[in-house]
Image (cartoon, rainbow, N blue to C red):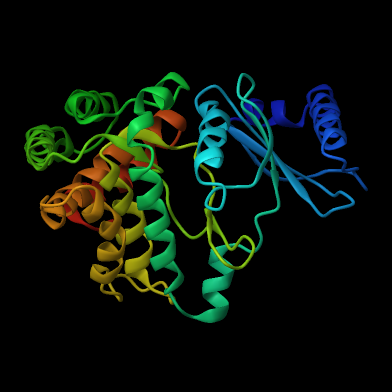
Length: 314
């Protein structure tokens, strides 16, 4: 982690500017801060601050240039799906700033307490409906700066990635396999759309207790929408409540995700498309994830291993 990149988020002048902006937005909403801000999240590409107010906590988030599109994207999603993304109080897309209402308890802690994965059915249904409901907004999302990782670009981007990094030769030799999977997905005809690209239980919150909220759209990209399944099915749900690899059959969860797509694309072989996307999604995650975190070579290698092996080597 670059210390300089982290320290810019702790700069006193920058923090004073944030507080002034937040207090002005709160005043417009009829809210008032009741204490100093806390800064629980600081990484090179992003930071989060918690502001206590007379109506409960609110959350400020800032992203650097690689993820600045999140503010504009969340504003778009909040307008279309107000009960499924963070309650957005204010946004400055040019600076990559967002102010959000509290989203409630995190799914990670809720699952641990309930010892059940059933909440994922609602989350997966929600994500699929967000994707289907934004198919008409692809160009608008690209204009906001959401990265373009559509299938037509993926083979070249993958090949460039594995030749820039010090990775085993087998990953460099896998470019034809990427092209094969791309061709398979193109034949199925699922249109390019929005991929959250890092959907796990730390990104989902319980909201008002009735419907789950999906947060952290900074890694989102425009690509094959089914790529979202790689992280959430193989990287998350398959491990179960007790974090045991392969302990859960992900088929019912996959089917819950595919149900809204079956309504939108009748007659499409969605299961076959999801099988190909599950593998290729890890390659896309490697490409897109490294773009947002240039220092994340170890994570990139793990994603490449998931792509070819379906697991990370011990």
